[in-house]
Length: 444
Image (cartoon, rainbow, N blue to C red):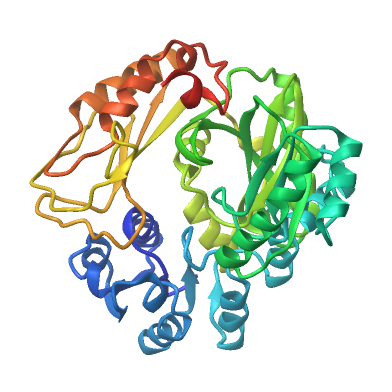
């Protein structure tokens, strides 16, 4: 077992990882920027090291300072959480060179799956259903138009690296393909340092369904079933739930096994997620996230498995083995991402001091957060301040529990998305369970 782990992250995920380490008897090191000097993750860890100024590029993304903090505190491993350096191949390589265990997949695996075009080819080789499109990165707009004409419109041009909707354009005609091609390339280059783009058929009204997997790095993997992540705004998820109630058991098992087979084929290590679009009873592979997901708690609730602990145990070689028969999906869980934003004013971020904070409680209600009364939210980072997760015996009970918990959740001094989430829980299309990724643009 590791004696000490450094958490190369901030906010609620840093707190989440520190708690898992404590339960395993592992000492923890927090790193923090000058803007985060009063953050809860710094207080909760056994040791804390300041790694730079407020800007992410000078702190949470500045690899030399993170490695120095690891060596200074004699931490044996680094948990990257999600975001920041969690999918940075250079960081993984530097950790290896310094004899530090990176809690996540191998460099080879990360390289193969971070290139979305290559990941799509590997998925196809593993028998995972994929959308028609280019086999790899496109060389020019003429090739893009030729492929688009073959597969039919609409199509989507996507950055081969990165995510979050950047380097992504939808085209309905050949002229639009040529027009958007260079725009997508330039945006991909500025956002991810790589201008490669590929093209595929655009699914107009799908559900966004993802499969959670765990792999031991030796060719063994298991699935922890699916999450429905279709409540989105500009490709950013706002609400997640598990299970996805529109799937039948045959569909659920087929796509889960396909995801597991791909993870086993690439000898995946740790927690990972395969994302799919689901429309007209067909699944299409989008990409693989080679890290822990923000929405991992809904899977933990329905499967009764601590994914962060599993990551750590696999990384240190003390995992007792992966047995699919021991993983059972039971009940229903929903997560709302609580952001410091004014949802009724264009989701405008609202950093500032929390004058009063009242956290909801009760049976099967969980809040992952890093804020407290008197804490000033810095303006330099992501606006998510908490995740509210509930569990019920079925979806109806989970929705009622979420509405109750949201009504209890009070954050004074800043705007939050809590009122917006209440509206979602009351929306008739959401209540039906048949909503798609177009829920917000069509209804709210």
